[in-house]
Length: 71
Image 1 (tube, one colour):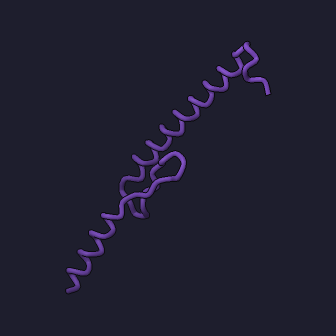
Image 2 (cartoon, one colour):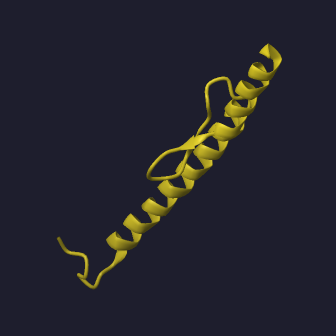
Image 3 (cartoon, rainbow, N blue to C red):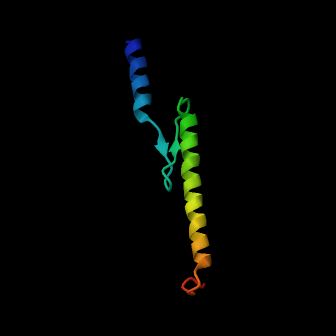
């Protein structure tokens, strides 16, 4: 019975998996996860891509000489 309970807890923990952030769907590994390193690297790639996109958008708005973006 104890072996079954331990197996059930292990399977339950594996089934839960990671959770993700609301806005950018960044992975939040569970405590004790062995994949936290890969998740962290992937999250940095996602953040870097979004920051680059935002920077490009700002540059494009500043370069727009049609006065379409005057505040």
